[in-house]
Amino acid sequence: MTGEADRVCRGCVIDSRQVEEGTIFVAFPGENVDGNDFASRAVQSGAGAVVMTREPEAELVSLAQDKGCAILLTDDPEEFLLRLAHAYRLELGCLVVGITGSIGKTTTKDVLAAVLAKRYRVWATKGNFNNLIGMPLTVLSAPADTEVLVLEMGMNHFHEIERLSQSANPNLAIVSKIGTSHIGILGSRENIARAKAEIVQGMCAAGDFLPLLVLGGEDDFTPFIRDTFAQPAGIDVMLAGVSDDDEVRARDIRVDDEGRPVFTLDFGQGETIDTMLAIPGVQSVPNAVKAPRLPIAWA
Image (cartoon, rainbow, N blue to C red):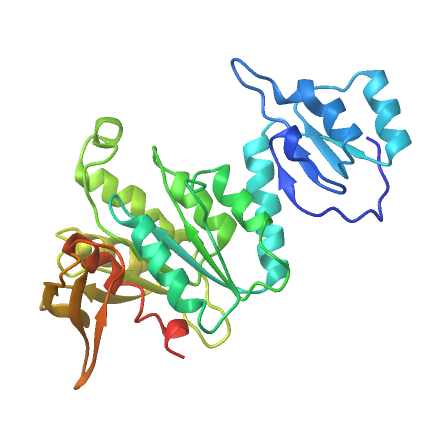
């Protein structure tokens, strides 16, 4: 509606208080607070573009014209964010790792990000920014020189992981474990497994790296996800965890005097590494093991 076609915007927020020069502000209507009411504040603060869900008043249009701020209209700000994040993800051209599961997503994400950061410029999900709004905001906040994006993907309903995956296009994905979170909404662990397995729907190759899904041999829904979702989609599967069936597994697990797990990471064919987690408790081991064997971590 207004704006300068050659203006470059940097960053994206949904809180007008976080607007900086050139930021995109996306207004979300809510039951108690309507983001559209803060469009004027965003323009005054230097926003490069304001995305609204209702027609702006003439006064706002005039202000935006004076400030060189674009005003865009959408009937679905959530989908707008996802598509914008997808476009930026393609522009970055980096490797993307998607992590989902009922238990252990954050542990897996933190361990993987720490391992990768030793070799690459990594940008990872912070806090609980793992839903249909938080994940695209994470992508859009990534620096232009990012080499690896590590994205946590959460959900409450069917098709949410699918939408996140299609936005982020992960090259590598991890399903940590199928538990009982959201069973009151989805009705069964099988349905939870189906919802988590939606991550394969947006996966793609990245140069020489073919799409790879990492699952745990100890999880009773691993064969279901592998046979019903990954293999039909042409996605390779690797097993990692604490089971004898895992290609990569932790063995000889014990804890030190401070409660930190110490174990041998066995890659098969005689290749092992003795390691320790900084996170106390052996319950973190199965999820942490899924991270280090990813090819980009050990290239």
